[in-house]
Image (cartoon, rainbow, N blue to C red; front, side, top):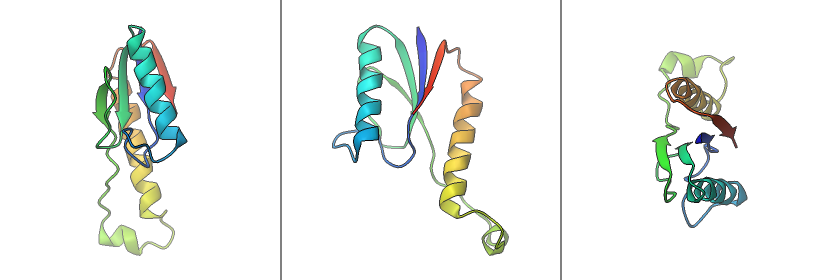
Length: 103
């Protein structure tokens, strides 16, 4: 089975883990790969999970000065995460996946 995982955007999925979500994602991805599944994971830069194909979940976003001055705009951190997940979801359409797990 070809499985896609989308990791949390806060920290790389690599040891030493910053928290439980990152550790859970790594164990899940590695366990699926060890069982013979083809695992593709979108994760922040610096992620490392043996046996898993990694795709970068870019968390940098350049916002124009005009957008930053717009008081109705969402905070830049929110926009960066939103666009990273949007890019990952668009990339999912190009992959032939049997299952998608969004953590």
